[in-house]
Length: 193
Image (tube, rainbow, N blue to C red; front, side, top):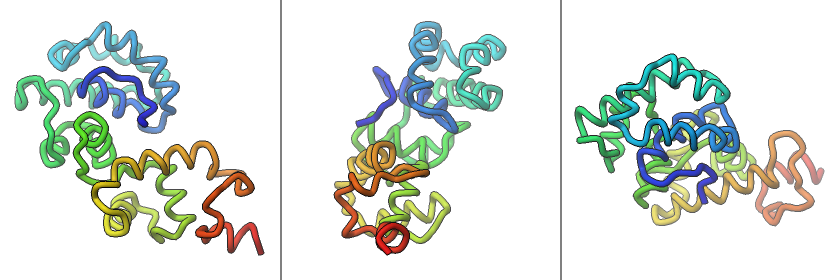
């Protein structure tokens, strides 16, 4: 389950753009007032950049995120009638939207498995399980798409994110609480030796 709070695809797109280098909890603190002020792409496309920056400042990288939010909103209005598109190709044309954001929106808002979301948790856990040996998100995604059936891509990413946050943490993974130790390369080579 997605930890970001949203009521429609536009809100999820905005929240996902804000989540770059930021926790979902922090984003969820910012978005209620943001969505009240800018309820849709048309309103956000006309946002005063300084006002928007002040509203999202605590998410970090607020200048770049402001440009992305306003740019994406303008593109949504001019190219898609204010609606969030339902294809990877169209989403990737929006300013500030790369594969991770597009995959989150497609999978979570529309139930479309366009790829596998690769965030820091998915990258870490899939590497420790040796589902990939890559560190670049796109190469990790390609490895996971080959290894996991398409109908599992959306839920698989959510499960890895959850596992990475709760058990397989970056520093000090809780291997003693993990049900995957018998499958885990990291456990065999770093913990159990």
